[in-house]
Length: 205
Image (cartoon, rainbow, N blue to C red; front, side, top):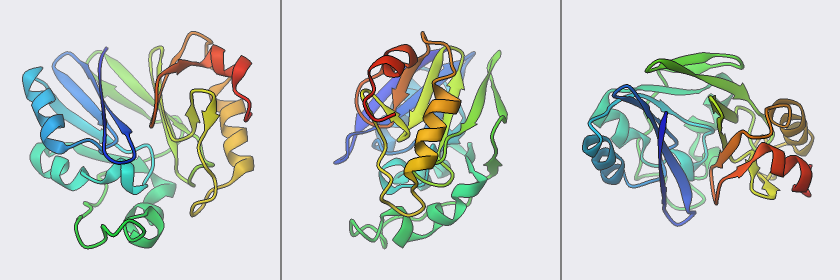
């Protein structure tokens, strides 16, 4: 699989475009949609999925525009619906965006262990609650897209709606740190890392 990384926005959130055999999945939608669509067009890709690792504003801001432009299947974990759809819970009102963004309804509600076919491979959904109730990580071969669950030498905050420090620690230890140490971690913010490095050096878990 090939990967394009598009950091953007005031929160410097990462949007990822993961592609194989002419089709792609867009993971999170914080980047400018014109930039996403240009990258897709330049690489002659069809957007098959839009996958939201969780429902906070900095990761979903442009999902309506991207959904309308591509018709892709919009995916979010089944336990994230309430946060995603509520402007008080997802952060839109906090940052004054509540009247500027229309959020489309999800097409597919994900659960732990789901697999989404892409090209000749598949994307495995790992439910990693803690940062929010329906936070997910997406495993694609030796690449893990961890949303705001696991960062380089850090983890996601747990003081927002539905957050839980215990759940986040359990998610990282029992669902992410059990992966192969060579697995490359692509987080929702900041640089990439590896599972092996974080097992040995992350001070928060």
